[in-house]
Length: 358
Image (cartoon, rainbow, N blue to C red; front, top):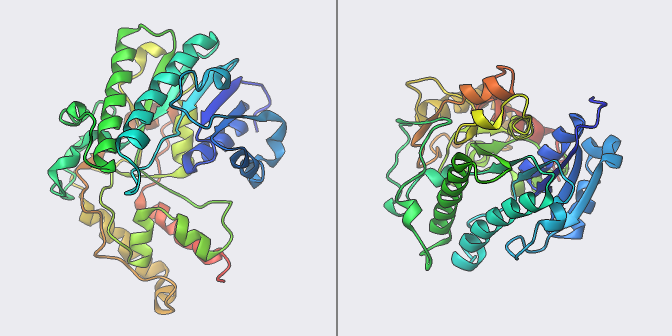
């Protein structure tokens, strides 16, 4: 446990999967944390987490109900040394692509930059991005799972997605477009050096890991990531996978990326990659089948008992990228390797078995 006060981090989306893991890791590393949430009850839930109990005196919060409103983050970032911007809308079918996804994503990104500059105290912001910014939403499910492209710290955003503007056809198009455009905007701002705030972007893979807020298998089934759900319960094949990362490894990358002594602003690449590296020649079928074999070997009795139903045929439809995150691992993890899909899903299966069956 760290004892020195390393300053105040403001974390948006602090009650989400990545957000809460970042809160915990930051507290453990000696930071004070300001949780930025949309509702008061979200912070109340955070405070019940077993991992934060010993750090409650290092925890505070600000409620920002609409992060796209002008000046939304001004008070939330006042006095903070760092910020981690994770909050964002997920492309659910029922939401309006322009008003509930595209515009809020663009506006909230600019709002947090403006708030950081106004604060006069924020030195660096880490932004959570997504592999969705690397693909064109409109070409259909044609990317395949051969992982022929490389997702590393210098991968390019999709140039076609940069051109899409409202009115947009679907939440999926809005998500891909807004991610690519925010990534491009922030990278241009970083290169221009026009902002006094250091900008770091992180592209996570599918985030996998147990939750300390879940106590029953029924609750778990509603929260488990799509990749694990497909493999362990023969659920719907996920549409995309851009690598895989354990939630704790993902949080570690985000918080360590704030450390200006590890990486100065001059040495920051376009983005870091929070996902496990896979060797050249790997493809989606190989990764999925290896994990399937492990589940059969380790949890065969549970499959026979009907607890699990192996989804060997339910690999993601689109897996265009092979992750190479060795630079990120070297810079922030001391050379430690991020956990891959097989290790992550094994932990999910073990955790699920430990939960109450009712």
